[in-house]
Image 1 (cartoon, protein in one colour):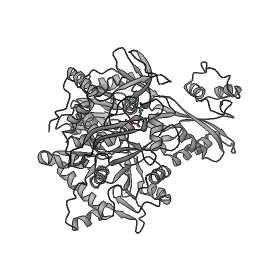
Image 2 (cartoon, protein in one colour):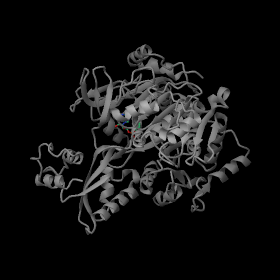
Image 3 (spheres, protein in one colour):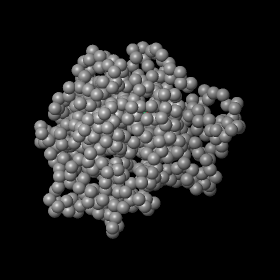
Length: 637
Ligand code: PRX
């Protein structure tokens, strides 16, 4: 399959972009022709941002797995769909062709059906990065169950919150997962989580690490046993459930500035079209190439650019179970040479971390198969950009700096590899169909170039968030109420003289730690759970590797024996409540927090102190107790 909608030149981009803005319905109608529909849609788009309402391809019937699997069987049955590189380089890798993946997805879809799981049911998937994770995800989509994949680094409490919110009826997990020299006991974490999740009736456990697990009678079953049952049934063909374009495909939880994580909902047709269109155009994927996205399927990047984007395009997607620094910091480079990877898509935090190991891990590495490099998740600093370009891309592979969000479903602003220009630390230009604009605090549009403002989008695109699970008003409030009739991204942004966009970071109370989104309120709630903690305030500060580190100011009245031990206890508490990714990097004990007379914490001041800008704190006269600022400054870590 070639991609007739793949943009081939800068001139074509300009022309297509123009058309996508002037005649969006016609434009998307043409793109949608390149997918398999069971029944054609009646209308391309109905929308009303004031109600947080967007419907794409209404009335259409389809199944995303027919687009990701069945339709490739005619000409790509023997093409590798998934290449799996295990954590341990001495273990054998696995290759699943489209035929094999199709078969395994149907088998597991039958397992789900045998366990009474049906269209519309929510299934939580908590697994390591093994092919069975992709299989389970696709099997849910096959039967119309809504998957909610949870990243393997989240704690039992976080999982339980997510399962309860989604009222999931089943969990698919593994005994354990390998990450470098560690084994994560996934099933054991699930067991803890399920103590407070009465909706879950079945747990399917895939054997992977051979970690001992407890299997609860009547609830837990082995993946392999269930597959055997299907085999004895004679491996039936599981027809792809007929889904409406707007039927929910998945929920993915993500952090916001307030309260608990919200379940971002994506639906079937629009998400599929968007994941596919952006994959084909941004990376300029050519049939036969190997695409290596290093994200975890527990995040949106994995959903869109390991699973749905590549597979819907009949591409070969490489799944890696391990981490970039084990057994040594040359692991990515070894994998690239081993499989002749064409496209590498990773995060700035990984690039910065690998850059820190110097040239040694690159010795004897060829890397000549690479044609396109990508980054995602956070702003990339120029130094890391140049290192990536020179050492990995040999100044010969365009870098796409892709800006997008869980809520956007796919890439929104990015250069197209080798087609539109790149600029270090700039995401550059919007994709066709994306109409960005910058606004000031009052929501007034900031026109012209060479300006900064808050980034909004003024027209829907097919991958836009549809709702937050179970609470549509929260979706409306969070994204569509800050500025009238606009989608607000929560990001600050600069538009340079050439109209290129550079994302400068969040303007709300959301941190971006190693490319992971973490709400300050969430971390504060977790810290406050620790006995002896009265109150806390969390801010981000620049961190060489992680991009942002977590700085916590804590009022502690428990027995103060050893500060360092107390810090470790607090860190342990956060790990338990949220997961290791949210652990504070610095904890400063304070006797009070800078608050206004109305009791609001002045985070701006705390941020400045954490950043080390002690002489530039700004106005403190509105504080209830201005003296506290001096104390905090003095105690800065
Ligand atoms: O602040 C932006 C940052 O990551 C946020 C979205 O996080 P999440 O939903 O977890 O999705 C990450 C993967 C798509 C954005 O609001 N961000 C993402 N990509 C970039 C970025 N910041 C700068 N440059 C990027 N390329």
